Length: 115
Image (cartoon, rainbow, N blue to C red; front, side, top):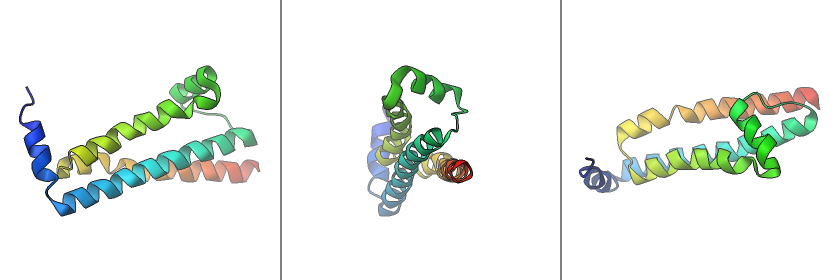
């Protein structure tokens, strides 16, 4: 069904601009995901609670390892944009960067209020 996809992906990986953009966006995604985990842990230690029901379930059932599925969920789109650096993929995934940045900022703000 998608036999054409690897060919287009290989062609796009020959574009230095698309490859550079995909690595920058993927790096931002993963850096912010790690910062989100760190600030979430700081917030929990300060007395905050997780509002995301899925993450709260992971925290309740996986204990200190709750961050593994959280980071894996972010790793998948990061790998996808590196493997297939098409401009439309970058356009669709890149808005996640400021959204994650907002979550990190909000977590840090909550830590500051509770500390």
